[in-house]
Image (cartoon, rainbow, N blue to C red; front, side):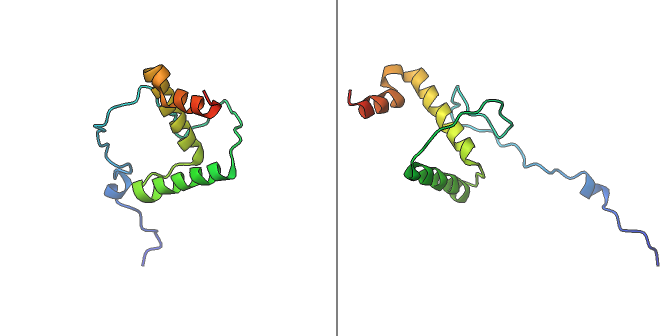
Length: 106
C-alpha cells in the first residue's frame, strides 16, 4: 500500500478551460460598453426605486433568459454605449434627443 496521493493525468492538466469562440454575425455597434474590469473614473447617478427595480429585473432577465451573468454596472455601461452610438449616428433623430425633448416639453 502506497501513501502517495493520486495526481491528475496530463489530459486533465491540459484540458481546455474556456468555451470555444463563436463568431458573432450581428452588426457591431461602433461604440461599445466596457467589459467587467477595474474602472478609474466613477460617477454617482441617483435613480428612483422603480428605475432600480427595472434595472435589477433586466439583469435577472439577462441571466435567466440569455445566460448572461452581468452586474448592474455593466448593464448601465452598455445602455450608455448604445444611446451614445445612436446619438452619434442619428443626431437630431436619435432616441436620446427625442426622449429628452419629450421630457422637457419641447
